Length: 85
Image (cartoon, rainbow, N blue to C red; front, side):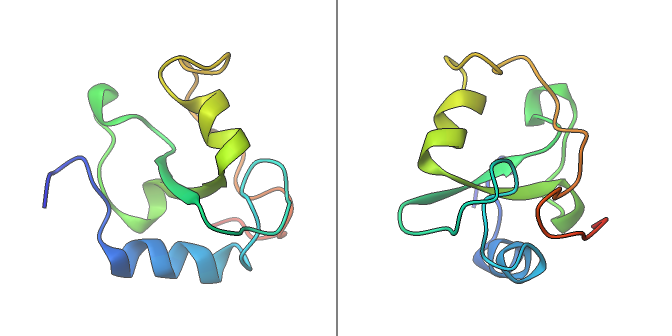
């Protein structure tokens, strides 16, 4: 596994923590969904659960390298679940 990829276990735990909703928009997650780094790997982010959020396809494209939020680090934790982690 690449050091820039989350394990399946980490993604599964993030899904449970987020109550299976997108960490950004709060919509219920359906396939495809994407594990995303809160702090990008190229900025020193790791593959821990604390740095993993799961996003719907639309939000992931916005946070992706070409999206309008591509240079942002996600700082607000799971606003739609009430969870600080």
